[in-house]
Image (cartoon, rainbow, N blue to C red; front, side, top):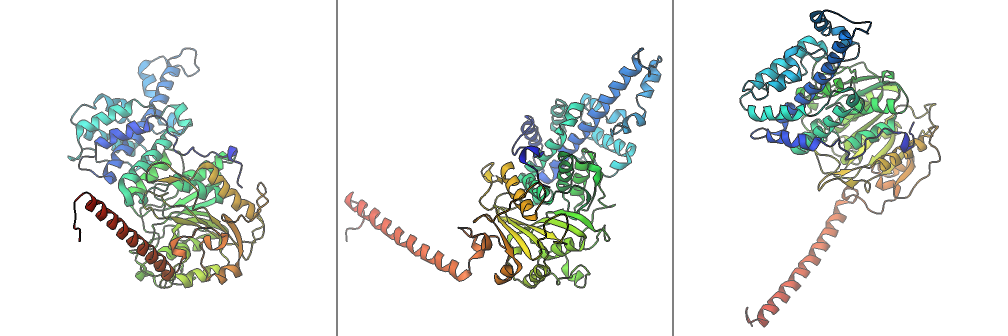
Amino acid sequence: MAKKKSDTNMNKNGATLGFEAKLYQAADKLRNNMDAAEYKHVVLGLIFLKYISDAFEEKHDSLLKEFANPQSEFYIKDEALRSQSAEDEDEYSAENIFSIPKKARWSYLQANAKQPEIGILIDNAMLAIEQKNSQLKGVLPKNYARPALDKQRLGELVDLISTIGLGKKENRSKDILGRVYEYFLAQFASAEGKRGGQFYTPRCVVQLLVEMLAPYQGRVYDPCCGSGGMFVQSEEFVEAHGGRRYDISIFGQESNPTTRQLALMNLTIRGIEANLGQEHADSFHHDLHPDLKADYILANPPFNSSDWGGNQLREDRRWVYGTPPPGNANFAWVQHFIYHLAPNGIAGFVLANGSMSSNTSTEGKIREKIIKADLVDCMVALPGQLFYSTSIPVCLWFIARNKEDRRFRKRAGKTLFIDARRLGKMIDRVHRDLTDAEIVRIAETYHAWRGDAEVDGYVDVPGFCKSATLAEVQENGNVLTPGRYVGAEEQDEEDEPFADTMAHLTEKLIEQMAEARRLDDAIRKNLQVLGFGDES
């Protein structure tokens, strides 16, 4: 259930730890002929290595002190035996700390940072760690020795990262590494432009999805999980509200192999167990969890994907509400989510605004059938400029399998519409962010409408939210754009008929052309007064 703002564990938008920008600037030095898609792995891999090495060496030093203390019950007189005992893997696994071989420890790499073979040493360290820790096999980047990577600047980066105590116990409790990861993911997404959306969903959007779904316990699924942000927020939500992270089970998959690596590292550094399948795979053509029925689905699938291979899946059993058009995967994703929902399951996901109103090919018919089946629980229109991958506004869909679910108010035959297009604040010249208060407002509106125990008293708010009946939606041609229902003063251009749009634009153009002629005449007369121009 939604809680008051003070009870949430939301990270302050734009809050930093003080050293991320400096670290990112150093990383940027490595760019040269590398694009962001390459150098992000250089930096994130080193941050990961520093973190797990710091944690190991802190525990290692603690063990040595304990074994050397005559007052300790674990005192070991022989120095060689003390050193040997401090390497015992069981001492580390008990505290969820990875075992790090000597030549893979950060202290060793830092001592050799100025050596020309530093790239080889880092690759060997990554390989040694994977061999020592089976859960990391195939996860870590191992291409630091490649010629294209400037070894002098790589050494400088090692030195800079050395100044940050990422793995110290007090820092681990503050989740410093996770926040550094998120900062870097955001920066790399911005640098990569559209490609960044492959692995990064803005934190405020993830927070909003999680706050609205409130995944306390059960199976959580994301079939296009990117860097794993949905999973991280789900576990943070459970812990922030007094639950246990082990009350939820995480399932997901990712088609991009390097993005999947990011997800595995992102989850590993936080101690989150997740079943992402044995390999990278396309959810449409190789569903790694074919029999999964999830209690919660959170996802940000690729927008308007046209190369999803729909022609090979014309008779797929997931297309209960109609065969998706091969030129757009939006309603393939919607039906994939519905297929994987448990009887009382609920899904929240991001889609392009066109999904709410498009009648292209079979999309309108599919949406009509989904609406008629009374599966659409809530629609949220978001402001533009939230995403690094696109400046266009997007929307959130919430699909509920059972609106008669006894945990909530019965809401059969109704859909909540929320228009949040005017919310958010600019965090830089081109990007917008939803504030904590705005996230709470949207989430609590949804929870009040559902009749959650902690939040009640829902009322329609003109221009913001409206509880509409199935009949009203059908009267509006099965269009799910919130602006149609909440009485917003302004409407997106897509809500206006094309002929009306052209009429308005033409009228405005004629006015501007007339103004241009007036200004030309005024300039000509002024030139004539000054003795220039044609007097005739």
